[in-house]
Image (cartoon, rainbow, N blue to C red; front, side, top):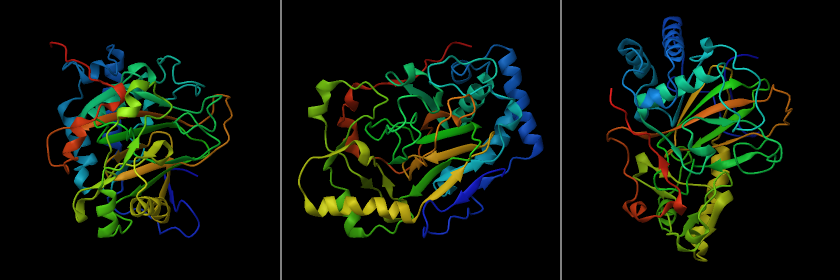
Length: 348
């Protein structure tokens, strides 16, 4: 089996065949130009940090223009986009590690560079102070002891539907995942809030700020903030531009409102009915609109022998305007003491 496999997440799910806008196939010329540019930067000593801060460590204009055209405007995505095989020319990344903290080596450094470069075309690449030591590029791979946790290092338990970093008002607009290894085509699962046919009544109910999302277990939140969290809106936006903020694994309801809890409970089965599962192949890049799509992952048995599934991730805040505005009350949230790592630009 090669390439990207699209299939319904569950028996009886809605047809999941991708539309023309879901998958893009970079031309051989584009793949080679991107790979050559990344390797030249790596040879020149560039890092994931420098390619988002140093004007000397950027893609050539013609390559950046090709990639920008290939990515397209996020408003034209069906909530996500796949660039098949874009990273395929970056070489063998070395064996899959067993923990995110193992240092980047020369074999996988080009993937860090390439992912940071692509993220920079969409906006500001950032990290979190208390997640993966503030790194800009995260390793997503199974780790011993984390098999059943609701974090990216899990394996034997399915990763439940969620918005990335839904606990924070400064969460990413876009989530980018590049596949380095996935021998069993373990699926990344996605569903769009705009596909589930949410009723106007449920949209109004879920627009009430009646729950709190706590940070997931990959963070070290400030416990002093937990009891002072503000209620957040699960759904917002107009009918044709609906957005969602959702992470039931880490959610606390603030009031016993039966109408709200019933509306909230209807979301999970609706996402299941409209789910798409994407089995990424090495070199594939998946871009997810974090306001539109919830995502998760199918379970799998880890090997811990260097051959496990291995993705890398970057988080991006959108450049410019044109996206649905998030609720104004989000500006009052404390974010549980979590702060974005925003690399300061160095002088050229």
